[in-house]
Amino acid sequence: MNQATVFDCFCGLGGLSLGAELAFLDVVGGVDADETAVAAYARAFPDKLALHHDLLREKPRAVLREAGIERGDVDVLVGGPPCQPYSINNHQRATTDTRCKLVKSYLDFVSILQPRWLVMENVPGFASIEGGKFLEALLRALRSRRYVTEFLLLDATCFGVPQRRKRLIVLANKDREKLLQVVRELSLRQFQSVTVGEAFADLPADPAEAPSYCGKPANDFQRLMRHREPLAAQCHLNSQIGRRNLARIKHVPPGGNWRDIPRRLLPAGMKRARLSDHTTRYGRLRLDRPAFTLLTKCDPHWGCYVHPTEDRIITVREAARLQSIPDHVEFTAGLAANYRLIGNAVPPLLAKGILEQLQ
Image 1 (cartoon, rainbow, N blue to C red):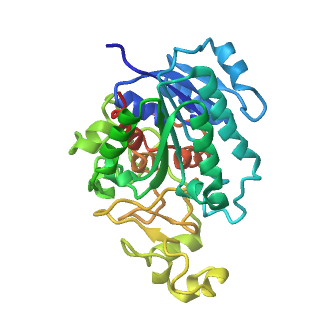
Image 2 (image 1 turned 45 degrees about the vertical axis):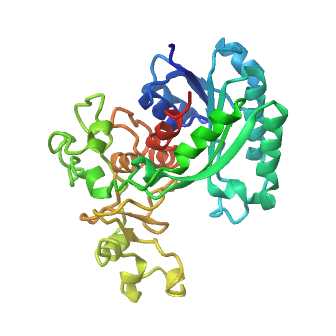
């Protein structure tokens, strides 16, 4: 039996495609408007299609025609439209955001390709925006294309990702029983305890050291991250923090946060904060637990990004590990751009866990 083929809409650096590869599916390629993301995708998949197109300006039919992709070439259409318009962290979130039109682009790909399976990933806020009407409109549009639809909320920790990251997954197929079986299997997934310590243990604690590994992979997660046997931990580099932030994080123990910092050292705005506010700001990771959700910049002022034992921010490679991005994926952009690419990615192990259920 031939491998199922996968095409990745809004691919970013390729989290969903990397998951498909780990699930032994055949990746056709991906498309994204972000040139830096497409370059990263092309490095990760040198023999696949890495298409640089802005789907707000270009029609899917024209993109597919130029790429030589036709109906019958794609079995599984995956995609994670930009999540910022739907995120509860965005205080201006609204479907009037132009990027919301990209859901229509995804539907156009569906109409043209008629794949057997559809997988769309987004933040949980996708289900609540407009009181649920936006999600319902998407499901209705898929049903009008003769698909049966389901959606569910999945926690990445249940798929071996060392990070607490909940995501809304929309699934569709034209066979109701097949779809319901997949939903049942995914709903039964239980928490898998992959910790920050297990994710980081083979990486040098001091990024200034040579980027060689500290030894052979010591657990299943490390073996999976190094499955293509890279010779070194590429881009084990981090943003430097200023003198004031360094003075602050020295007071924060593993699992601690801004509340552990002496008041005299806090930024002016945070001196007015209530103890119940900003619970992960200036947070330090714990070796014995998964990380908090990664965002698009590893800035201690915005979240829990301090290394568990070192007085520094986690490196690009450590951030990639927390997203379960394998070590062979290379990062060549600036540090800020790399953190953004990683924060926007779908964790490949989450994608793998979903895609390996599809038949």
